[in-house]
Amino acid sequence: MNTKKEKTRQKFTKSAGGVVLNPEGEVLVVNQNGNSWSLPKGHIDEGEDVVTAAKREIYEESGINEVEYIDELGTYERYRIGKDGVGEDLSEIKSILIFLFRTKQTGLKPLDVTNPEARWVSKERVAGLLTHPKDKEFFKSIIGGI
Figure 1 (spheres, rainbow, N blue to C red):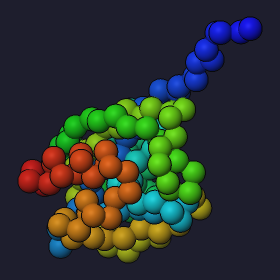
Figure 2: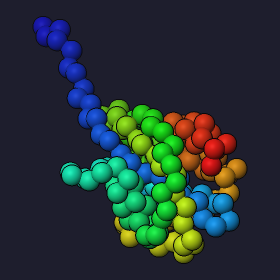
Figure 3: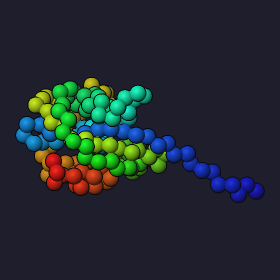
């Protein structure tokens, strides 16, 4: 009888992204896989600094390529969103570093097919739209400073 418990391997990843404000003070949110909403963010490529990674992810997920760096907003950890946007995928823990950016661009056209839609949303509505509870919690913690 085998009493050895199998350990699930957890992958630890680092991501960078941003709270992007347009001239009206609205916040950019992006749709992932057609079933969840988040701030634009993603993995940091080999040799890439975190601000460059955040800008690249914003561009890929929204089409916005002219952003002005304002400040670092903080880091938080969470599990990856589960399949179909439901629950959590416990196989991956993400450390997410978020920066504040401003842009004069308002037209949105995502390049990444896994992020089919992007929207400008009033600050007051962002937390209610974000899918992952940790994303909501983080945004609520920084909304007063943006």
